[in-house]
Length: 190
Image 1 (cartoon, helix red, strand yellow):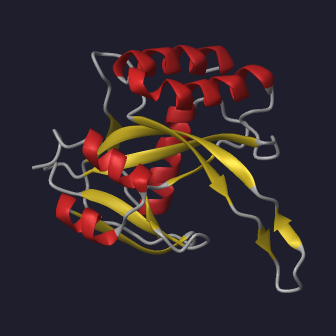
Image 2 (cartoon, one colour; image 1 turned 90 degrees about the vertical axis):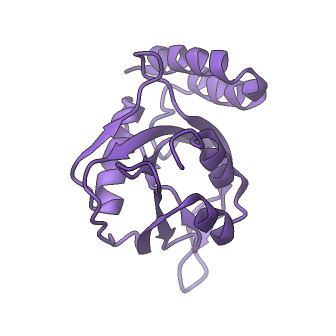
Image 3 (cartoon, helix red, strand yellow; image 1 turned 60 degrees about the horizontal axis):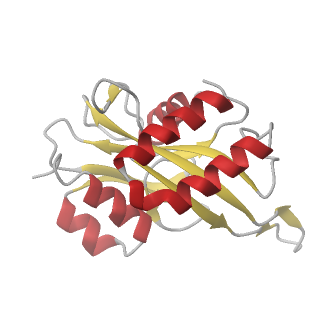
């Protein structure tokens, strides 16, 4: 994939979700104006990939309790120069969940994200108060995956990983983007 291919994928996404024009426009603007958009050093932010992983029986989703942010979220992370954002999402899901057999879900025989989101990442400081990472934005491209194995393993990036059914996710978080992912996958969940 390249910046051009990502923009094409976002066009296909927009055809499915026309009410998300403003969010897609933000991402396209970053991609068009920053050749380094796949690098974590890009500012005002950078492209990240995330995975919404549904169990093989379509009854549950896997979430991680993020170590740095202290919240239950879908696995995801930095592209670090990799312009194949779907592969970034796959890599992050396998690393953060410990799953070895997951497959991406296509829409109509083509690769389209399940969701996109632009969100703020707060600055991080070391014990002495020095900035470790400045505040910036993640331009998150999120894909739907199905897990073919069910045993989760906690990585160094998380406090915990667990499977949750839809009511469990709603009881766990009020994070709008997580609930939006849940709503978009309602047909996959019982």
